[in-house]
Image 1 (cartoon, rainbow, N blue to C red):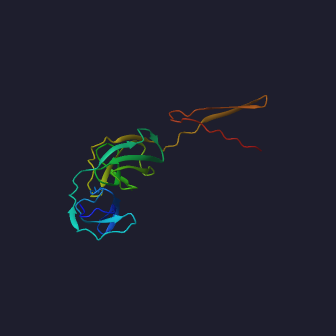
Image 2 (cartoon, rainbow, N blue to C red):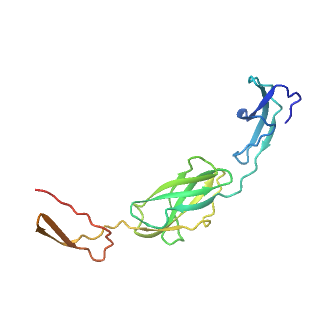
Image 3 (tube, rainbow, N blue to C red):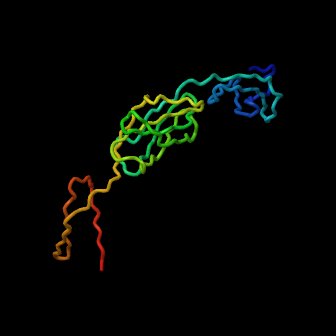
Length: 212
């Protein structure tokens, strides 16, 4: 835009749909992070050093295009590991405009998928890291695959094959009990011994002591 008389002008107020969105000193303005397929109305005011504003300029209308660009799942964390109660997922998503949410799915064979839950983006920005604690109480023991599908503000869904599913091992089965517990006393010390359970994936043992 331009002004016929620049005397005393120090800046401009920018209005979008009746709301002030910025004040600048230049005579051009780039508006960003707008909703797709939406009409907007703009006008401008000039103001002087005392903050006195001019009459509004003429109004102009403009519209954004339809958003056909799909969001992209960049990564799913953590890497493959063993879990028993929940998987603390962290999903990185990017979009050309705004990430809305993610849908988390799991599969036992990497072919047939079931919904595990969904999580909303906190900021609605173009780049989001979305956290989700995946409950394993209804999941069978053994290997599962986990993937995510992202949605943007236009409800475009990411390609489910754009990132590889992460493989986890679920173990909710208790190990067998230790056997043949024995104790020997010598010089103020108790030597406690036992046999580890056969065919068990026990990683460590907890020792309990009671005092009578």
